[in-house]
Length: 86
Image (cartoon, rainbow, N blue to C red; front, side, top):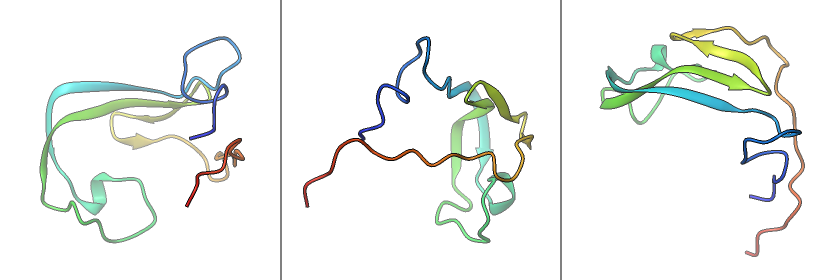
């Protein structure tokens, strides 16, 4: 995606974006179970196996046990280093 070396690896100097997954947990997807600013998901009602327990963004815990801990404006735009041919 043109974001390396900052994204896509676990190494000194990278962003440390990590997810800890419980591969046995089953969830029914709903708009309430997702952290997004829309009231619709095409996956609503779908049962999935495997659910994130902790999500880290740039080394900071963003989500833990379904609770959004990040603050507004924590995101960061990263310009891609390559162009995708159309």
